[in-house]
Amino acid sequence: MRPVALAVVTLLSACSSVPPAAGVPDSDTDTSTGSSGGDSTSEGGHALCDGGPWQSGQPIAVPELPVGDPAAGYEALLTEDYVSCGIPWELFGFAEDVLGVEEPLPGRTGKNAEVGHAWNVVTLEDGSELVVSNCLQCHAGYFDGELIVGLGKASADFTTSLSDFAEPLPDLPETSDANAAFNKFKARAAALGPYSTMLTIGANPAVMFAIILLSHRDPVTLAWSDEPRYELSTELVIPADPPPWWRVGKKASNFANGMSRRDHRGTMVLASSLCTDSVEEAGPVVDYFADIQAYLASLEAPRYPFAIDEALAADGAEIFECNCAGCHGTYAADPAAETYPNLLIPLDVIGTDPSFATLSAEGGFYHHLKDWFNESFYGMFSEVVTDDPTPGYTAPPLDGIWATAPYFHNGSVPSIALVLDSTARPSTWRRLDYDSTHFDEAALGWPWEPAMAWSEAPASERKFIYDTTAFGYGNGGHTFGDHLDDAERLALLEYLKTL
Ligand code: HEC
Ligand code: HEC
Image 1 (tube, rainbow, N blue to C red):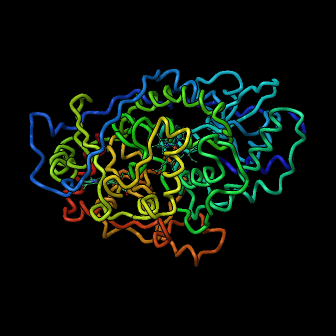
Image 2: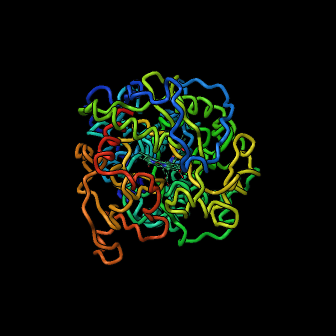
């Protein structure tokens, strides 16, 4: 959600909205390219090299999912009001004046072709029109200047409390359904605000959003109450990094700690349940999320757009087989020949920032999410599992991994070169800029520079600084590349470009 949207309404008068300039070059929703031909190290029955840390991994069973129609899912994603409150169409032009105009998505029709890609325009029962946010607020990002649906939005800015925007705004007279939906939107943003403010641009509060919203809802009826059911805290806001959607087809679980098990419709719907206050409203949404789930599972990673040294990549493939494949799987030109073990790696083995996994586990504050969810309406479809058999993080598929900086579940590491050498990671860093055409082909990630400590920086500079000493922002662990020499790491990086 883009908080600034709310602020503009103070400026409102009833003008019609100015459509954003289109002018998007062709194909940027490229989800059709297959994973490209990495050497298949598993073909021919090679055994993985002897033992390794993957032996501590706990396999997660692949669930049976409901049948869904990917094309219908894509359509639903970009037309439906699964977020059922928002901004009246008449006021949206002012929102865009302040927000900046987001790039629209080619191929959309009607008013949806006139709004940025992260918004849907819906017609309510009384005929009034409402602009609601969609999943692309966090799940469409830029690589090399191209907007890619499903790539995590690494530049979303949640560093200002949503309540700072929402609280000063007047309620609209409830003369239309859209105006009423705006008032609800404003009130919900105010409830989220104080507990979901991030330190750094790109750090994403989605998990915290869920925990806050559920604290206000009855699990069975979904009815909203202003008093939270459990006490919220501003101390426990930790960052997440939206993962690319094209992994979903391989993954048995969702979320960094593998907590969404079985059919994931319930947990996905939650991601947007800002305003869904009854089972009557939620039921049909869960139904069409079977299609959205099928759409996500149909996505494939884009292809590396720059040069690849094939001989070097072939060397890297061998290093990958013995050091990485045990956790991250094997890759091949033919997707049917690929393998993926779906392992949950215990915290003491992976060693990355433990806060998310431990907070979510028994005894941690985020455990409220599990307790609420499994007894809720949504728990009939999906299940949240946080400690079975142990808290940890899943080793993700590495398809298109070069496109998805920053790395680790909290986005604490700016390049893959640094993922492979834990000793070289900066304790505080900032991106040189937010231009996605500035890409470091050697390190596979963003150009960055060291920064001063967040707490010592001037207030206006803070949001650009990723400070790994903050709670939940740690960049340690995953030391599996540390023993390699520079030449081996170079080869491995080249190989990762082929995935
Ligand atoms: C406010 C930002 C935000 C919005 C809006 C959002 N997501 Fe997410 N999403 C995230 C973040 C952050 C994660 C990673 C959470 C984690 O791993 O702990 C995530 C994770 C996911 C995952 C799991 C992927 C994986 O590999 O584990 C799926 C699937 C997903 N989101 C689907 C959706 C859908 C569908 C919607 C719209 C209904 C949506 N999200 C809306 C931020 C968002
Ligand atoms: C013991 C299992 C294991 C081994 C071995 C392993 N990884 Fe990982 N890897 C993980 C886990 C688990 C994560 C997620 C950690 C997190 O997000 O906190 C991860 C994360 C990553 C990421 C970042 C993914 C992202 O989206 O942020 C990259 C890149 C990566 N690994 C590459 C490698 C390479 C290359 C090797 C071989 C040198 C390797 N890994 C070896 C388990 C492993």
